[in-house]
Length: 298
Image 1 (cartoon, helix red, strand yellow):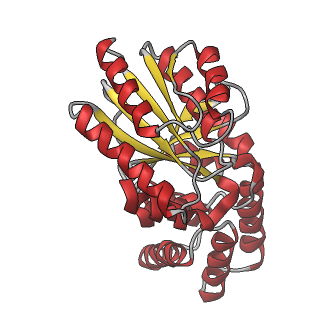
Image 2 (image 1 turned 180 degrees about the horizontal axis):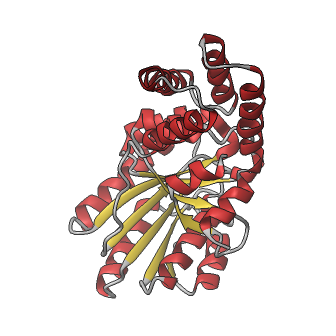
């Protein structure tokens, strides 16, 4: 099953909320102010932010008026293009090697699972991978990550529970450099973005990577649970302020009818979606395609 097919499957709830409502809208309304007001309501109900929704609908209205167009298919094509342009506003990073990827996020978003899937993905692309188990805060975190590392067939560097997370990062970097590893993925403790002490620990790990491996292509990815919707904005803002965020790993899209939040979040925060989880298996992670995502919404 290709990415489009998987995305179409996981986006069923969001697509039903947009596509069916659009069909009803075209059936009862001609193009006009009432039409555009209802179009705004449809996008907002899919959890696209109010500000981004208004920008998108204004562009569609202006273009339709200029082109003197009242055709349903043309308006839908305008909507798709505007959504695509909005989602593509932030440029995706390149994961050239040697690469260090620090994975951050709050508790319960699927961070450990995403790291295991990501490691497996890089291995399948012919890259050597090491995982750093720098979540020394949560009981059995390293044990769970070890299971994923074994499934992906990659090395893992870990210390005892309660150890200094930055020391784990230091040792993992030393090991990765010594073995000329292509990709080092750093797990971090799931932390509430309001916990100042844990955010300081994250900043310390960030400094260790920059100091010890300055030549690496260093990226920081945040894992977001799609069911969180617009509430993910505050998570992204706080982690961005702490260490800077280069991209998003999106999980649990199949559990929400509000998957549209990622369009406005990525646009407003200027942070692209890099990877998307499409299921529970180790192979169920894909490079994010904005075109496939938008197409799957209709």
